[in-house]
Amino acid sequence: MLKYYVKRSDGESYQLVATPPDENVWIHGEGVDEAELRLLSTTYDMNFNVLRDVLDINELPRVESHDDGLYVFVRTAQRGKHGQVVTTPVLLAVKGTVFANVSIASMTDYKLATPVLTTQHGVTTTSLLLSLFATVVSEYEELMHRTARYIFNTGRRLRTHEVTNQDFITFVTVEDNLNEYRMNLSGMLVVAERLRDTLQDKGDKESIEDILLYIRQLLVSIDNHNQTITSIRNAYGTIANNVLNQRMKTLTVLTVLIALPNLFYGMFGMNVALPLTDQPWAYASIVIFTVIITFAVYLLAKRFKVF
Image 1 (cartoon, rainbow, N blue to C red):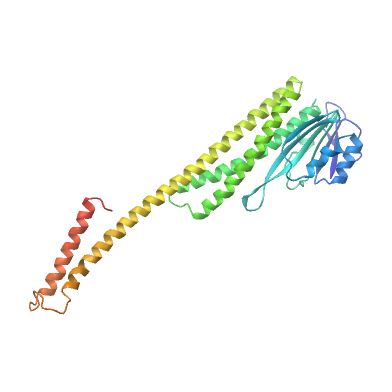
Image 2 (image 1 turned 90 degrees about the vertical axis):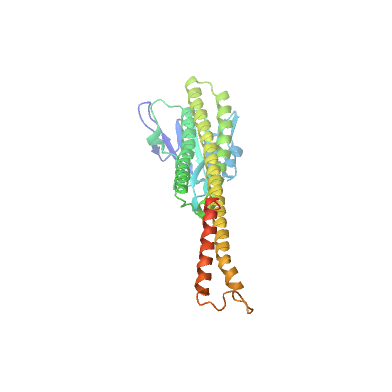
């Protein structure tokens, strides 16, 4: 669906209109199809072949500059089922006084702010493009904050040994999301660098420099999150190995302590002539002796820090 916004004067905000004007218009498209893109191309003489690329769910960030306008592809991100992040291509197009942002995503999934709320006085179509570009990048920051909180909470629970196998299964999804962030942000970083070389206005160049810095900061954050996940995995693996070693030592000592009494009981249980056979205190003495031997072995094990 295409929505058309116009601004009557520099002192007013953009207002929604039913009839598409020929110029000074912001076109906001969501859930668009090929027919609407063809209408957009016919009405404003935009390159239909480029517009149609937004229908490709796998379209990567790129920028194209033609005689009929400037076309910038970015990818917006939203949280999908089971924590998996889903990204969708968005086309930001500028031709003269006409600006359009179109996407196959629906309003319920697409989080870009409405023109009425974001437009300031005296803005140009290029500044609108850069504003929405920054808005798309900010969606990644919001999702990364949620990811960072989960990683932090998992690391904190590691100190109390409450980390479960499910946490590490979830880490697979988290790492997939971080890789998706990195791939798309790296692509949009290249797009921003090309825009910096294309734009001439000083204010627009400053805005694109801010976006470049913004994206680079997010890429650094992704590296930090990946390193934190690796550290948690390594720490948990070290703790698990250490606990296993301690338990194996304990089980070994317990096996020896249990085997010692059985050694003497087995010897005195043989059906042959044995010492102390006719003595009434033989049973008690054997039991006491095995207890003493077992206790002595236990003390030696503690002294040499076997467990």
